[in-house]
Image (cartoon, rainbow, N blue to C red; front, side, top):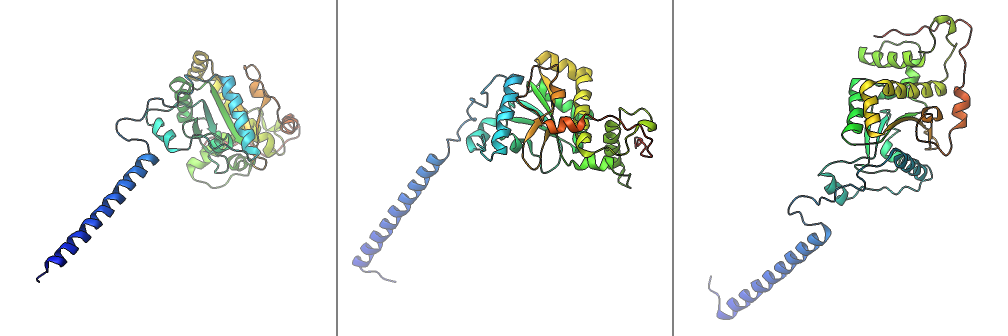
Length: 288
């Protein structure tokens, strides 16, 4: 095909203008990307989340209480969720508290305490059952992450505790073992069948399960050494599904440096129960 000189000049001019437009678009896109995201050359900044070398147990306690108050009042700040936070956490984690909570999907510690990425070291297992792996994780949180506060967080209407109070069912071996452990924990203060209550209510059972986990951790020799070395404490609390509030068990605070501003009187009243003197056919389960 033959082009005239005029056609060739027009074609060349059009192509040149098109290249200019594409070049401008590319430059604008690059500038926008650079403005939207920090430069990725080199490692993330080392101002990593060390808003503290460590946070004392009292400061951690106050921070958890304040965060839960915001959560219950629907005034969450949703801190530490952005891109920059993720980048700083590449260098390492520095949580300020360790939480042993239930695996129940309704009780998520980071939400309950209005905290974000890297703020809490969380261990979750059904019924807050303390076993070797849980104990090791708590030791790691205190010894290596330098968390000065460990919280055993139970909650009302706990399915694992409810299952432990129900008549035995034909469940998989591992599930039976977990439920039996909770059952034996709840009834550990009843040395013989003649002193078993006719029925253990769910509220005191949940509280007793939390306090048992607190005691079990405190008497563990390795955990005890870690607590003493780092001036750390272990306390218990119960989360209420309806109100969103966390109430700290005053019994678990006794003998520690922590003191709550308030506690759940309803829990205290309901759990100051004495064993029923009458006989019951509800016998303790055996380890499966």
